[in-house]
Image 1 (cartoon, each protein chain N blue to C red):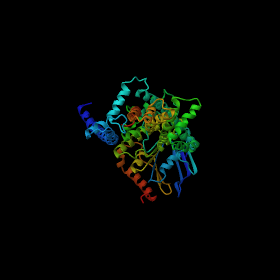
Image 2 (image 1 turned 90 degrees about the vertical axis):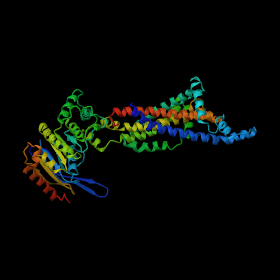
Image 3 (image 1 turned 60 degrees about the horizontal axis):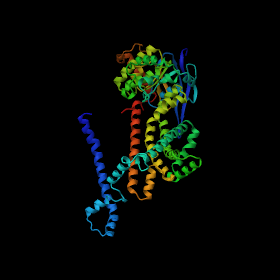
Image 4 (image 1 turned 45 degrees about the vertical axis):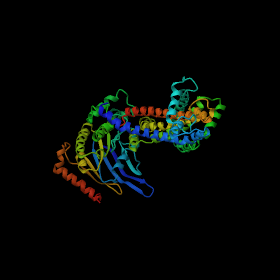
Length: 259
Length: 297
C-alpha cells in the first residue's frame, strides 16, 4: 500500500429505490498504485461503473472508506485530481473540437495565453492535430472519443478514469485506439482506471485486472497482469495472453457471470 | 443554382404551393358568389331587373359591402390603401401596419426578456420553480379579450398611454411560450454533460453560461416563433379598446362599425403578411445562429 493513489476499504454502496434496495457495491476493498493501468471487467450490473463514479465523487458510498490521492473523493474532485472519459464521447455539439478541449481549462481558470499551447499539445497526443475547427458531428465515432480523451488530459490530472470509452466502437477502430491509449499511458505516466466489457481489451491494456460480479456488485478476483510492458497487438495470440484471459474468464464464471 | 436544381425546386416547392393557392382561390370565388347571391337577388327583385347567372356572378363580386369580398376586391383595396395614399395619411394601410408592428415588436422584446428572466429563475431556484409556474400557467387561462381593456384603463390611470399599454398586452401573451420553452431548454442538457461539469468542479455560473444557455438556444428560437405571432394578435387586440385610433385593430373595428367588409379583410390579410414576414425573419436569424453554433444541417 506504499504508493496507493486510490484506496477502497470495505466500500458499500446501496441505491435506494421505491420497491427494493439495490446493492451496487458490497465490501469492495482495493488498492491502486500510482502509474498503474487497472481494468474493471464484469457483466452489466456488477458495479464497475458505480465504483468508478464513486472514485469520481459522482456517487456517494453508503459506508466504508475511499480515498483518492489521500483525500476524500469529494476533496479530490474539488482539487481536480482526475479526468473522466464517459462512455459516450459527450462533446458539446455547439463547440468545435478546439473549444471542447479548452472547456475544462476555461472553467478551471487557466490564463488565456496558456490555453492554445495546451490544446495543441493534447490534440497532438491523441493524433487530432488539424481538426481544431471541426464540429463533433463532422468527426467519426473513434475521433470523437479521442477528442474526449484529449479533453480529459488537458488539465493534466494524475488520474484518468475511463468508463467503457470504446464500447460503442467497432473492433478495428477499437484495436487502434487501444494501441494508442497504451502509448499515451506510457508517455504520460498517468494512473488509469478503465471499465470494460471485453476480456481481450482488459488483458491487452492493464497491469491489473479487477474481475467483478453482480447481485451484489463485488470483486471476485484481482489479477496482476504478467505480460511484458511492450505490447504489440500480436501479443494477443501469445500463450501468456491466452492464459491470463482464461483466468479472467474463470473469475467471471465463478461469479456466475455467465448465468 | 444549376438548371437541374432549379427544375427540382420548381417541381418540389413551387408547383405544390401554386396548386394549393389556386385551389383556395377557386373555393373562395365559389363562396363569394354563393354567400353574396341572396342579397344580390333581393336587389334585383327590388329594382325589378331581369338577371341571368352571369350577371349574378359579376355583381356578387363587385358589391360595396359584401358578406365575403372576392380576392381581387381585397387586392385592389390593399393596392389603393398601400400604394395610392401617402403613408402619413390615416387612410394608409402602411401607417396602420406600422402602428401595430411597433407595439408588436416592443411587446415581443419585453416578453422575450421577461420570459427568459422567469425561466432562468425557475431553473436556478427551487422556490421559484414551485411558486411561479402555477401563476404563469394561470395567467394564460384568462381570455385576453377580457383583460385587455382593463390593462389599458389601469395603465391609463397611471398616466401611461399610447404605445406601451398596447405593447404590454403583447408581452402578456408572448412571455408565456418563451418562459415555458426556455425552462425546457435550460433543463435539456443530458446527465452526462452535467456530470462532466461536475467532474470539473464547475461553478453554477459556468454550468449556466457554458452548458445550459447554449443548450437552450434551439428551444428559444422555436418559442420565439410562436411568441412573435401571438404578439401580433396581442397588439391587434390591444388596439380594440383604445377607441380605435390607429393600427390594424382599429381598421378591423371601424370596418365592423360600418360594415366595410373589404376593409376588414384587407386588414386581416395585412396582419397575415406581417406575421409571415416576422416569422420568416426569425427563421432566418435562427438558421444563421444555429449554423454558427455548429448544428448539423
